[in-house]
Amino acid sequence: MNPLDRDFAAVRECFPGLATDWVTFDSAGGSQILGACVDAIADYLRTTNVQLGASYALSEAAAARVAAGRAAAADLLGAAVADVALGASSTELLSRLALALGGPGAHAIRPGDEIIVTDVDHEANIGPWRRLASLGITIRTWPVSTESWRLELDDLAPLMGDRTRLVCFTHASNVLGAIHPVTDYASFIHERGAMLCVDGVAFAPHGRVDVGAWDVDFYVTSLYKVFGPHVASLFVRRDRQALLASQNHEFIGQAFPAVLEPGNVNYEAVASLVAIPAYVRGLDGGWGGIVQREATLQARFLAGLVAIPGVSVIGPAEPDRERRLSTVSFVVDGVASDRMPPHLERERVAVRYGHFYAKRLIDRLGLDAVGGVVRASFLHYHTEAEVDRAVAAIERAIAVERGQSTSASRPNTSG
Ligand SMILES: Cc1ncc(COP(=O)(O)O)c(C=O)c1O
Image 1 (tube, helix red, strand yellow):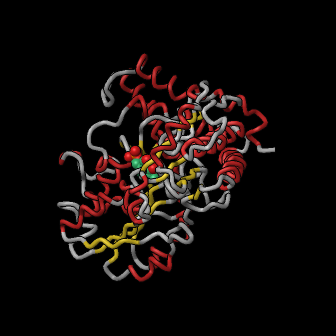
Image 2 (cartoon, protein in one colour):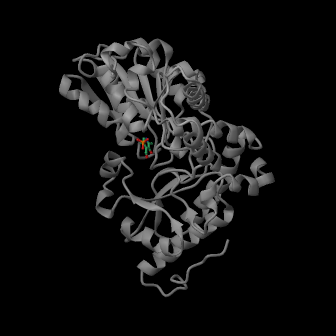
Image 3 (cartoon, protein in one colour):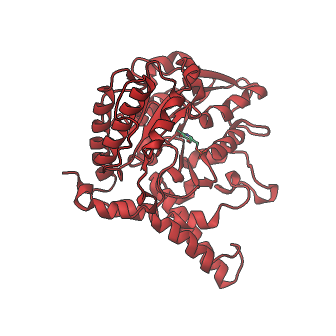
């Protein structure tokens, strides 16, 4: 029995958004938020909604709540609070980081230096780096293997040279679902004298993040995918912080994280983050319990999906709790991807189609013409019955598209 199964009803109850008949299989887009976060946001706004930094007691109380939220964000990264910058989104934080390392007035990465990006990442960890090409920085592309569906070190090695300063890659693909061994990649890249910037957005809802142990230089996550509100967190290794050119007002100086945090963070959203590590710690098995439960769901979904004639998984088709997320993309032979979600919606199964901002990947695979992929993504709080409903809905949608007579159009709302 999975540890979480022992009190699964209590797990579900932590998420008010699950109290519907929708199967919310768009989790890689955004998870359900903890009710405790919603309550904390409301309570912050009701009781301590003042500007921080003043000498009066109410402002100090508000500052203490925001500080506790910062500590929670750091805890979720396995980092010290002094090493974490917050922002509205990962896209925003990575854009600032790119400018701080290689933009106008920056010194860490200079014209003639080289940055390596991939063709499998979400654009958030590609575009900001590519834009530095206009300043004379060379950008090289590390292509994902379409055999293993992973970024392979053999393909990275020939791209690295004396001028390589930074390698940017995703911990796990938000389309393919494949997880990369970050620690191995970190040693390989550090041994060759470069830094690494890892996009942990897709990985973070599925397992424990531990930036210290992994020896990364930069690591970003989006907490609206990790049971929280729209706040993103960026770890910057202590000895890299002095490399950053400030993106803040001149008089604020060089202090980290202020250099990457112009303006205020969203106080109430940040304050609410305390509920996330508290929730995970309260689960039987913590992150280990989450991994175990998702393994069961993943195996069940993949088994059901690959058994449907005409379905091709885009990504590893074998279940693997260590090396694969419960984010599964697929295409259907002869059926454009944009045709599928409306059928599923009629059965209250929420999935989506497209390129998911990993547009370079979808273009390379030639899938743009069919509307990209259909993506079903689920988390530990989903049920086996929901997995079965999703698989059955996919099967019926395909049958309808093929004009086969079926009970397809009759919604299956069981479970
Ligand atoms: C893998 C990955 N990286 C980055 C992002 C961008 O995150 P944000 O919406 O916080 O900018 C996403 C969003 O979907 C993502 O899936």
